Length: 74
Picture: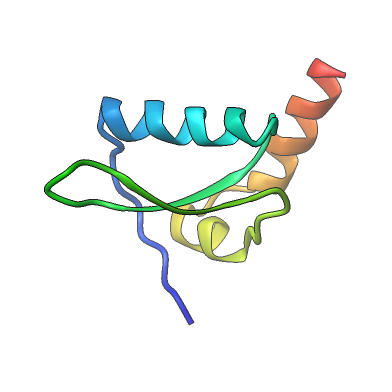
């Protein structure tokens, strides 16, 4: 029931998302977070994130980009 919109991540948000995925030993992950006065708060880290919302919000074929990343890094 959530929604997606394009935003610019702050450097702190980007680092937090990367650290969250790394902590779960995931090279590819969906990291859900909230902005707060204390900084970014991690809600969950998804090893198999749904792509429909992000693809609709960005107009980009994220699935193809993930496949290219996997092919390049296997």
